[in-house]
Length: 235
Image 1 (cartoon, rainbow, N blue to C red):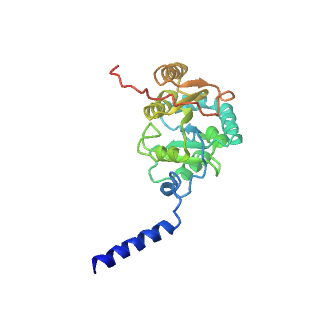
Image 2 (cartoon, rainbow, N blue to C red; image 1 turned 90 degrees about the vertical axis):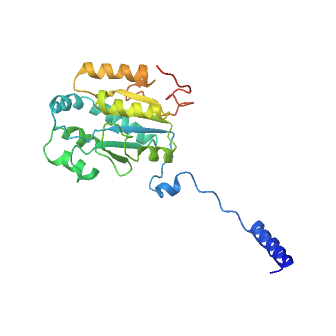
Image 3 (spheres, rainbow, N blue to C red; image 1 turned 60 degrees about the horizontal axis):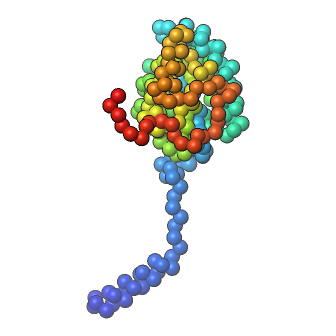
């Protein structure tokens, strides 16, 4: 091909490109989750291990203390749904590695376990999200971070069991990722009151979590993330 023809062809191709309509950029996260997470919200409620058979050492005490927080968690969930704030259930498999989340719900409802009361009142609805976690933190080896990124979440409201274990581990990972944290103080439970109080104090002091009750916790996003500090220190 002569240099003149190549130049003419190149000019023609550039002209067609200028005339062609530009494709709109894809929405953030749309390709990664294929439309399965339709909500968009700066705030999300994370319910931790409320679908829980409590068939383990200390489970009897935990089940008794958890029954006291059921009305608060119901209040929180109803407020979130009215405000169109997405609810995410983060749940262990509790050793049932061949089950999925639906099977866990059925197990807690129908197998006569200690945690039935909690599961019966707080079983998820079709509009809710869930993640199964292999360890204490809802972020560890789960899709939670991807889901929250897709939704546009900057503020997390945490509730569930136990305050000193899975709630604290999840809050720590959320803090490291820069999320603003709100912990529902009357919507969490531990095996005993001292562990619950000590964990709340740690969450407020070290992780900058805002403590509030289920009826008063703000469902609006903060003006900025209150999580990990901008500078790194050794202490």
